[in-house]
Length: 546
Image (tube, rainbow, N blue to C red; front, side):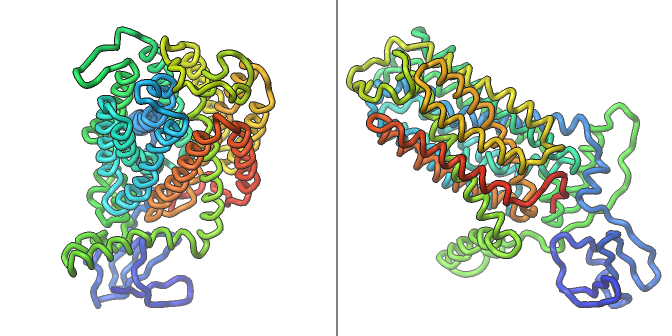
């Protein structure tokens, strides 16, 4: 189907494209010519019917206002973001004790910390693609449920290989929720508030980090949580794993009961009535108690319905359908790496890889490194000591390790406050580059210093500055791609980050006992590289979502 579209003095016949602000099919007749003014978003018929004004997505979001709905959305999405942090970081806190019960070497611990990232790599793009096709909310409910259920089941796994498998499946769920949460959240936000609100959402990662560290400090050292279940010796760290699965399950329930689908997705899917209903709910909550009525509006919606999956089901053999599904799944990646999106995609690929290798490689090993510093010195000073697996030194549990983890987690707070205050005025690109360079310097100094107190201080600096990096990356990543690619692109780059995280944890596991300097200095070098390429990204401060 095509229409006559006039722009200025030229006239051309072109297909309907996503985002064209045109009236629906009842005007598709031969009675008159349709004239579309892209700048004014008006449709006029030559037959004499007056202009019919339709709101673009950004106009409809402004019409819905800002208020109670957005704060409720922040709490629900923030709790989901925190639940992902808890699920990822809980492994790092259980390593100092679980290694004895599961008979883990340093290489095994590297595989265990890598397992959830392998699952996130598998799930990241898969869930992101499904979110762009089937809707953000549905994917969030399913992925958070997978995360919580299999994360909880890991607590009763008596063997290392089963624990590893369940953590991997849990990671598949985490890989879906992280990128989709930010796409979903950003698509409810007014343009001028988007940067600050996404930064506020990102701060909930800190809340999850503090929650995981606090739970570890309160639960793991306690002896009352130890009992036997026949074949299983249920130590306190297993109770900690159970508690870490609760946030994901409660998040899935909140999305299922309270949250609507993204209005931007509904408009792109040509589901105008549902999108208007969402904007009505937003308006009514935001103006609650003010006595205002929601105005009658019409929306600019896409003319192309999302029926690709249904068509795939009805055509061809099972093998042919599978081939078509796989081809469709890689289309977003091809679109990301061609045309005007090509350069930014390569730059983001480098940044995601470097920051993920550095952050997850070091962060997941902080509790283990700090336990090795109990006798004093830097993290790499005691590499000649025998492995804890051989001397079975896990019990009694040293509470200082978890106290230090809690302090490092709490040091995220200044970075989060700084990001919220500066994001809209400074822009994500500048904050991203600055924080990466400072993070690189702090890691280099962690290797240089010789006392535990100095290492703890620099670890807190790294924690506070690296959170600025992630917050800036969350903002920039959601604004660099159009709606039909947003979740897929974030899912893809999340997958790239998981590859880096897997490699980092394997490298740390192999070298932490023999040549600790190599992974630490490699982290510093990669963060420096990312900081130098970040300024090459386009400026996205307060831009409209496309």
